[in-house]
Length: 189
Image 1: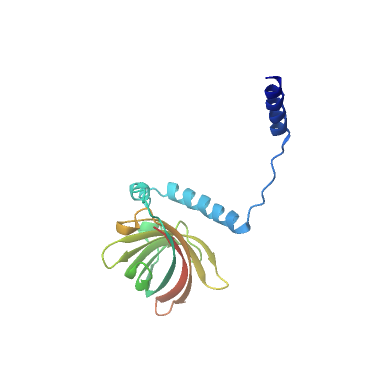
Image 2: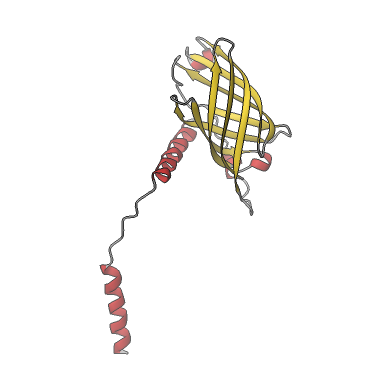
């Protein structure tokens, strides 16, 4: 009995004397965490775009992360002094394209701009030919290469509860008010 008490006391002392090791976080993990924090802030500050029932619906048994490739093109329109944007420029973008796991799709997004930068979050909706939708928000940009980073946060149909990330490389023709893009990322659904 004394041996068991001494053994137990020794184990407790050993456990209490251990120090936690500092685990260094991978910079990519830190960037993902920062993106997620920005997304949560944007989503809860813009509740009219947040569809919490679609986001929280359906815990799927077989969720899989897949490579996701996108190519699209379309038109853009800029409306100066837009009442919907409190006097800022309203930018409307519509297009169509093809994507793995989505097939042929249309895309629509609208946001307010001061002429250089957006003045709020940029949300996009991609709609497949069968009506299933993917919802995303711009979470980053690299003007030096012409890319925008989109975070997928929800969907409808087979994309309920979808999440993912994609970098799209854009070419804008402001004179003809057209765009084209391509890119790849991952999609979990």
